[in-house]
Structures are given as structure tokens and as C-alpha cells.
Image 1 (spheres, rainbow, N blue to C red):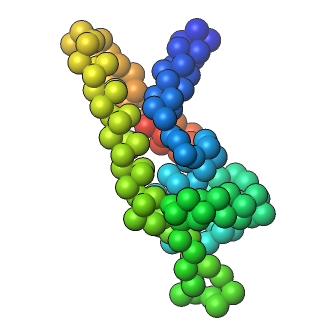
Image 2 (cartoon, rainbow, N blue to C red; image 1 turned 45 degrees about the horizontal axis):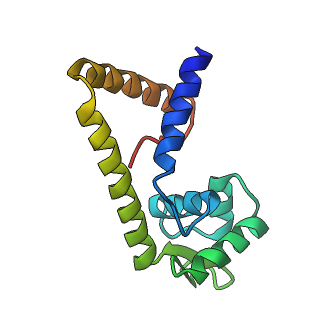
Length: 141
């Protein structure tokens, strides 16, 4: 089972290698979280990332500096800011996902029909179990 886990990990890591530049892995995680949960505040984003508000604030500073993040006044509180992906951030994420999807589709096209069928069944089962365990469904998008 551990060899299968290592294989799965290497496949997932390989797809992450479709360059996320100019972002670090933690910045990319924040961009994906903001895409899924538009309009969160800093505390909510920190919770979603499993981090602290000071660390996420610095991460947001860097995302704002590259034009991927907008900080807007909150409708809930004058002391709070709402975090949103900018149009540039959304375009970046769409492009990254398209490049990853193209790479995956090219590799899937080379697989046998039986291999694709087995992979689909296995990934569907994995996703169901991950969701039941409360893990984020990373296979979406």
C-alpha cells in the first residue's frame, strides 16, 4: 500500500509542477481558497489555510503586490476587510488550471481504455472517502 501512496503522491506533485510561477505553493493555496470562498476576511482565510492571521496577512501583502488580490471594505464591519481575487488573479488561476488539464488530458489519451476506467473508479472512491473524512476535495478543478 505504501508504494501506491508514493505513486499517487508523485502523480499529484507532478501536476503541481505545471508552473505556478510567480506564486509560491502557499500563495497558490490562498488563491485557490479565495476562488472557492470569495469575500472572506483575513481570519476566515487563515482558518481555511490552517495558518495564523499575521502569516496570512503577509501572504496577502505579496498577493496584492503582484495584483492578484483586492482588499475591500467589509459590508459587515468598518474595522474589517474583505479579501477577493482580482481579475488578474482569476485569469492566472484559469490559465494554470487549463495548462494542468491539457497535460492530464494528453496523458489520459495515451492510457488504455481499461486503465482510464480503473483510474476513474479508483479516483471516485478516493474522493468519496476523502470528503467523508472531512478533507478538502483537492481533485476538483
